Length: 280
Ligand SMILES: [Zn+2]
Image 1: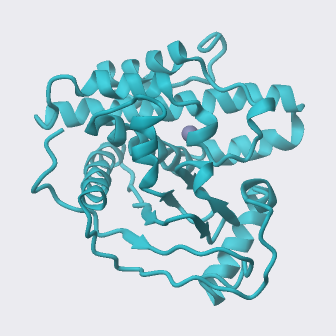
Image 2 (image 1 turned 45 degrees about the horizontal axis):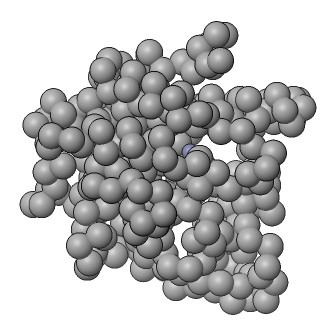
């Protein structure tokens, strides 16, 4: 992907930390909003976090206007900027406004404002409660070394997938999921989860469609994304709120199918993975 010299997103922050102090994080109003969103959506922080930490009162420093320093950080910030450009346009075309999410870098452990604490082992994740994509960039190395998904567009896909969850949040899909969560059995809910994941892959594909139109793709980029979609178990890419054992994520074929469909059509209306018969 052509990214050097691309616009870096201004919505980048940085901060890591372990320990408790869930609501102390961000403090005051933001903490309260996070809590209200939690009450409203029913997203249970305890399911997202790494339960190991209990030392209350410890807060982490969050650098709200972080300037990317390393090459990987710059890359991630440019990809994030590209998602803002593409989704900003798509929402505008729908007569709506794209509320930009934030990209949050951390190492090791992180306290979120809407989803409790999480560790790097969770993998990159999106928190609907605070509209942030959290990533420990060490995951990129893991992607290459453990999952054999190499190439810059494999990494771009990971970010675009998480941004796909933000799009679902803006379009109200995440909220519907949370309602369904209370009414369905675990098995039924897991089936819905798969559809939610596949739709995030579809949105990543839609994004890639527009990146291609802008002439920013290199030969082989789409294969890199498809390879990543196929190689990475989604339990590593999602919030990790469901234990891998009880969670059947989409098969490699399904994930590649939906990414490709988004890439080929560039039309978000084609991404109804929830329609009956859409995913079997
Ligand atoms: Zn996901």
